[in-house]
Structure formats: structure tokens, C-alpha cells
Length: 305
Image 1: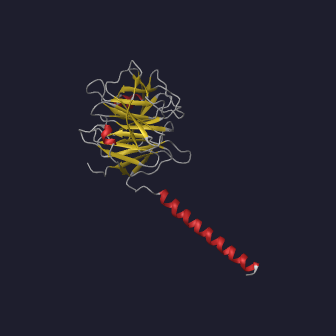
Image 2: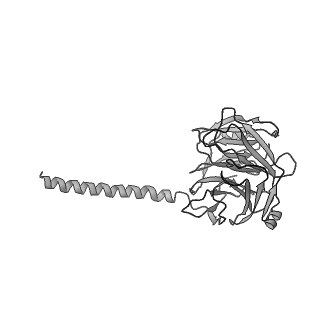
Image 3: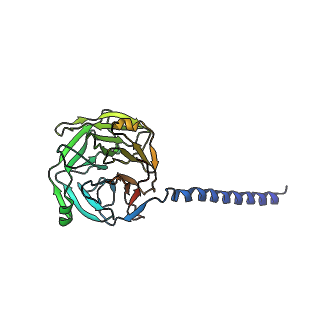
């Protein structure tokens, strides 16, 4: 075959391969952009102060209210927003610091009939902080907050603890409404660790959290337990997992079963999830992207009771 014919055939082959590559890229990237079923609604969150949201939880005594907070770098404060994405006010934690706040939980505590917020200063990218903290406050009065715009909380319990197997980077904090136990889940291991802080949590001493299990998951960024204790939801950056639990099961026992996978529209850096207060779905919110607006997502419940 002449060099000219070889050249023509080679050119045709290269063009064919390039066309195939373009087709492959299209077939891969297009589904990824719309991978999650459109089973959600979303609303814009316009408050510029909410630029690195890493925790969210739904109030159980103030309908339609969500508590959120930023990651490291912000003041020691939480925000109340409504389900339309509008900010209702901010609450400062007097005398505290926000080293690396990563998650927030809600549930019962030491005083009967009082709802508490638990703010987890549990992040540790380089696993250097031997002692982590969880701040416990009685849930602020939202009516007063809406009127004033901002409040400062002075009565704060600090639950300090260590891990039995050395420092861990964690972004998931859970409060069990059935037992009042707290759970902290690590982030970076190939099989994340689950640690328990049994109720009542001593606020005078540095506790040692008890490792109760491992999960075949990694890069966990958030979680929540439903108000009736029957469901546990966890997420990483690309998936949402649902664990079902009977009233007689412990959290460790619930984690021993394979989870269901729930719909999730991948966010720029999704590090927050919570159940709706009535259990009728779940919310997610992300750290803000420089290219995209910040949205609050809601997924109506479609999983079986």
C-alpha cells in the first residue's frame, strides 16, 4: 500500500476514534448531570452569610423552621431559616469558638420536656485535635428570634470527649430520641467508625467515646435520626443512605443491616442533611459554590414505613 493510502486510512481512523471519544464523553457526562430522579423541590437561600453550610436540622416545636450553621471560619453562631430559604435570625453561643463545626442534631436532654440543639465541633481534617466538643443548648424561641433578628445564648453545656483509637475527622452527629445517646461517625476511613456517648453525658470531665461498630461507607458528611427514632439517614458527597430501625433495636443493631439508597441531586459540596420534623421527607443543603446559587433541597418521603 502506498504511503498516501496509509496516510488517508490513518486520518480516517483518527477521526473515527475522536468521534467515538466525543460520543463516550457525552454518554457519561450527560447522565451524571441529571443522575438523581427529579423527585425534589428546591428554593434559593439568599443570605450571603450562609456560605459554607455544614449542618442542618429541623425544629420539632416550631413548624417550618430549620437550624443551620457554617463550617470553620465563621463566628460561633447558628441560623434559623424557614423552608422557603429565608433567614429568620441568628443565635450566638456566648464564649464559645467555632473551630470546625460540622453537624447539628436535635433531641431530648437533661431537662424533661425541653428540646435541645447539639452543635458538633467535631471536624479535624488532619486528625490532630485529641479532644472534640459538642455544645448543647435549649432550642431558642423562634418567635423572639424573629422579633429581635439575633439572640445570644449564655447557658451552654459543653460535652468534651476523646476517641478510644486516636483523633478522627468527623462530620456526622446524631441524637437518639429514644435513649438520648449521642453518636459521632468518622469520615475518612474506608469503613467509617461509629462512636457512642451514652446519656447522661458528663459536662465536667473529658469523656471517652465508645466505638460500637463500623460501616462499609466512606466520606460521610452528615446524618440524622427521625423524631420517632425509626429511621437513620446518612450521606456522603454522592449518595444518601437510609437505615430502618424498630423501637426495640439499638442504633448499632440498625446499622448492622444493609441500607436503602435514597434520591439525591449532587450538590457542589453537600455536607448537610436532616429529616423533616414530621418525617415526611428530608432536606439537604450544600456549601456555596462560587459559580452557583445556594439552594435548599426537599425530597418528599417515598420510602416505606
